[in-house]
Image 1: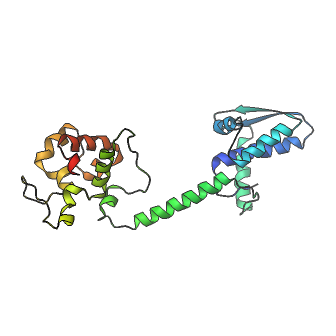
Image 2: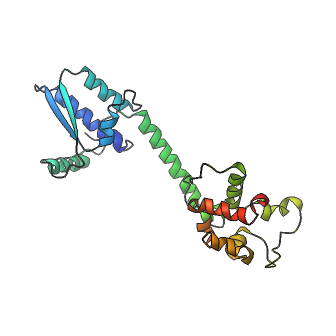
Length: 240
């Protein structure tokens, strides 16, 4: 058999067990041992309420059979007699059967496939955005960044405003129709890059917290807490 490419390895491993059970039910022997290297699949078979329809079918086969099945988990198939022959057979089937021979697809696999395609389409669009975009400059992937769960609302607003490059501190002049804010020490325009990379006023705090001088690194998910500590220590958090 050859399965659809939208099935994940979890479903594929279970389908192999299902086919083994069906084959065993067609034989005269009553006792069978099924050896598998996927501990997660074997564990999932014990779940009384599986969401994956293929697992439901497998459980139904086991409940309704008159035969006895035992399952054994092995860390890998290495060293098991016949494993090389099985791998060669899989390669042969892949070449001979260009299309899937089994049309059973779980709703979980369909959902996962659609989700992955949407994600890829989103990433493709994001890749086309020029690096001059402030958020694109520090975030190359659309994958969700981890946010520490204990941040309060003010901290969340601050870190997100900094990352998109339009905090109140640096862009309020667009609303007030004033001139852009100027750093009193450096006599240059105040920007996020200036605060995090250049301004000597903030250098002691940057050094103390070991905050990267590269803004792309400083604002990534790895340094979220350091960034919060930095803007808090230098009394910037309520201005952002």
